[in-house]
Structure formats: C-alpha cells, structure tokens
Length: 364
Image (cartoon, rainbow, N blue to C red; front, top):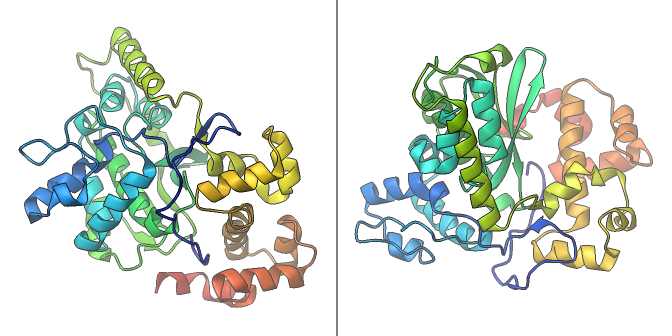
C-alpha cells in the first residue's frame, strides 16, 4: 500500500486453521481454483515458461494446463504469482487479466451472461467473485454520475497487491466487454503501485487515461451505463438466472466460504482505525491476545492495518483540500503534530509537501 513499509507474508506461516474468529477466510484455506491463473498460463505457454516448476501445486495436464477441481490456498498461490511476475515484468497484471474470458470465470461467468442488464450482471459477478477465484475483493460504489469499481485487499500483502489489482480490474473489464451489450467506456483508471508498468500498454487496454501510484485501485465509468440492457439471447431467462445462482451457491458451499470474508476486510469494514484492539476483539467475540495471534498468522498486525487505513484516508482528504488539523481530527489523532509525524513516517513526506505536490510524486 502506498507509503507503507509492509512486510511480505512469511513463507513459514503455519497450516493451523484460524478458528477463533468465525467465519474468516484465511491465507491457509485452499479455496482458490485455477480460474485466476488462466491468463498467466496462456502467456506462459506462449513464452515457454517452465509452468510445472512455477505452479507445482496444480495438477497440470499434458498440454501444460491445470486440471479442474484442484484448489489451492492464498499462500500457495502467491509463491507462484511472485515467480510469474518476476518473469513477466511490470505489465504482466494487465496482460494476464486481458486474456481471460467469461468461460475462464466458471459458473460466475455463465451467471453474468444470464442477467438482463449490465447492472445485474456486474452485481452477480461481484456477489460470486470467489467462485471465479478472486484473490481480492472488488466492490461497486455509485458516486453521483460515476460508477466506481474499487479493489480491496483480502489480505495485507503489499508484495503482490499491485499485480492482483491490475490483473483483477483488467479481468473485470474483459468480462464486461464480452457481455452482449454496448461496450462499457471507462472514464479513468487508477492503480495502486504499478509505477513501472508501461503507460501505453495500460491505456491501450483500458482505453482511457491511467494514473499509477494512486492510493487505491479503481475503474470509473458513467453510472447510467449500468442500466444498459443485455441483448436478447437464449440464456437471459429467469430459469437460467436461477440455475446459475444455484450453481454458484453450491460451489461456494463446497468451498466452505459461504458468509466468509478475510480478517483484514472484516476489521476494515468495522472501521478498526477508530477503535482499540480490546474493542475490536470484544466485537469479534475473542480476546486481544487471540486477535493479535490471528493477525500474525495472516502476516500482518493490528497497528499496520489501522495505520494503513488512516494514511490512505489522509491522502484522499489532503488532496481534496482538507487542512492538516482537520485531517488529524477526523482520523482520531490526538493533535496535528502526531498526525504529521505518522504521515511522514509512512510516506516520507510532510502533509504540506504531499498536498503541494498534488500526489504527483507517487506517479514518478
């Protein structure tokens, strides 16, 4: 995350199940199918990568593609993704996402095709994104005339987050472009990190201006486009919609993730930045010690999560014109001086310098 000195998830994390806070999706849960890797495998086959060595946890067939049915954990997936990113370079995220088809998204992709409008197709895809193997959480926000698709990390993992952001947002764009309707025109794209990626590659694919080094990753397009009807087709019927929903619900149940979200996302959604560890532990039905231990197993800490959330909010407020004093008060710091120290520690800039630069320094 921007400005944060995040330690990567340690490879030595134990395989013990996280059960004190339930339901929680853990980095150790084997729930991710081959869907998220379809773009990488296509590129790897073309580039003649040693896919069996790079993806040892998948059972590959004679063609070098993973057989269906196998699921792996986030920890297992990230090791392969790190190797692929090293070989594929800074553009790999958007290139892999651009190669995915609705068929690659499994039952979720079929369900999107069965919806009557773009809005319902997007909502269906977001509701069942884990079926398609999403390794982060995409959310749709409506801000007046703008529809914003925002990427949120499932786990606190800065080392691989920018790749996942680019890959998953590119996947979302590819999916929307394959729906039988007028193609969605994006107004703008912002990517967290990805500062080494080729601007021409990004903008050629997304078809709009792309800003790298943003505080979060998001796609922006005109909200009225969500009301675009999908062209009449055989699959867009109520029975087809119910059948696709049933198939996705069944797959989620088999994966054991119904009602689950990651502990990081759970804490962020509960506005942990305004509460103490004691308060959040009580709200989650556990002890502060257990909560610290669970977060340690996920490769992060309560302090890091809360400070990262504060810093991202602080950047948005500063760029929107808020004063240092106002930001400090709104984010719960004791005074402006404490906020300045924290902001400089995380971003290497004072709030004033960041505001004057307009955030442009993050794009360099």
